[in-house]
Image (tube, rainbow, N blue to C red; front, side, top):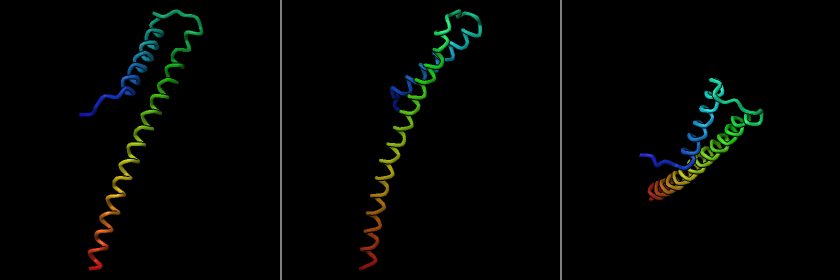
Length: 86
């Protein structure tokens, strides 16, 4: 089972705020000054930051795994070369 990361929680909280605000605004439940209409833009900016962090973590984890596999393949190549020399 995959562990839940803080970035997942932040992403879904941000999406909930964004969708909730848009639905409430469309239904006319929210009548606010113009500066409050910037909430979706701020939320989208926040979500882009969360998405960037998730992609960065994924790339870092993939790089570590690729380094591990490269080292293992180098070890196997070395063993195979030593066996061929015998």
